[in-house]
Image 1 (cartoon, rainbow, N blue to C red):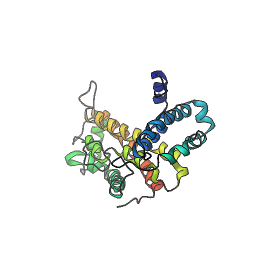
Image 2 (cartoon, rainbow, N blue to C red; image 1 turned 90 degrees about the vertical axis):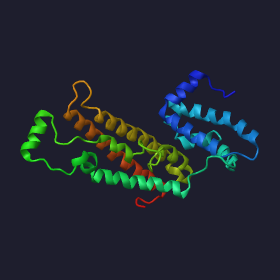
Image 3 (cartoon, rainbow, N blue to C red; image 1 turned 30 degrees about the vertical axis):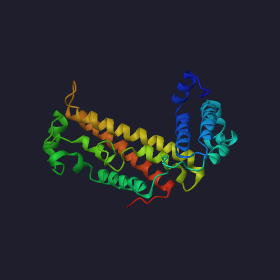
Image 4 (cartoon, rainbow, N blue to C red; image 1 turned 45 degrees about the vertical axis):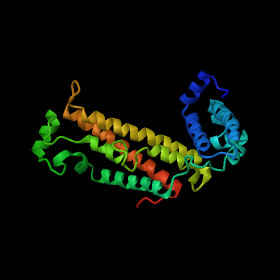
Length: 252
């Protein structure tokens, strides 16, 4: 009924650009519908056909996602689905959007006080030159780092973290862009954001178990911590871009 074979659907999901489009279409389909429920059911196959066609390399090279949608009647689709269904997942509320700003502030705090926050119980301790040389040579350390704390600042620790499931929140916020023409850039930033914070969390976790792994050492822990920091820095830059495109403040 959906007019897509399993193989075709697999290819669609495998294509990153098509996945971004599919997320957008799904967001609209879940958040909006015409007054008649049957209308939505009839429009869904059309939406999937649009996503499938735009997934081809030729379509992605010849036109942007927005132009592809408009060229295939996407504008009419969105207009038809504009009235929101009662109880459906809607655009984020101001309080939800504030979480993105708060999350950005927390990431800035993490980067500013990186050593203090991730350095364990003696994160503020300063090594003498002699002891620093011992650490560099032997892989030892006076204090054990606490890399998993990084996850608290990027939404991977608790449902109470401001950035918990932030990527889904960002997708829902797509209709709120200050400039609708920024949609391609916005979705690309959201996609990269999801990748970067996932890598930050992974490197933090790997760093936490660095010494326990075969051939593990303090040096490996530090290396993974540094990689995590690079990812957090890039994630913070992406989040800033997203906030600007949504017209949200950088400070609460």
